[in-house]
Length: 194
Image (cartoon, rainbow, N blue to C red; front, side):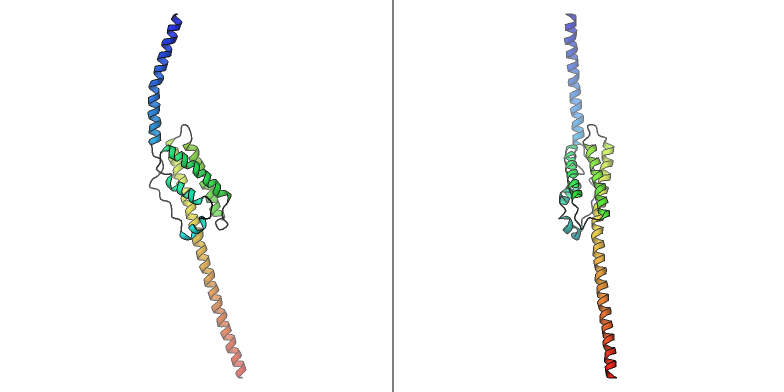
């Protein structure tokens, strides 16, 4: 009988102790869920018009760009959702890079973005994540996306400069040909006069 009473009292004490821990755990998880992560002041470069005309044909680029620009400054649940979407979008981007964008520099930047996005996704989906590490992962992911956008813009700037150079070289060749034709014509006229 004493054992039964002792067992019942122990059960009541243990169950009452759990009730006190539950509100604390709920409060901690509410605080974590309401915390804001990422750098809300981080500015991504704007994709130039010539680059935009090409990346619009690059599968999920616009969706990836939207997620990358809006993932900063959200709570944990939103970041978890957005990071999963970003990983999905970057995987789609790697599978089919358009020929105009398929350069070693852009490909390497896409690989770095993929790695940084996956690291962010892993950290944010851990049961017990480190908020300092999460902020570092945000910083690295933001920088990698920024570098990708810069590289895309630089590629199209370089293409425009190359096109101008080719045009000016062609104009120079036309002028040289016209000059040589004029000299040749003048020599023929001189020979015909003699």
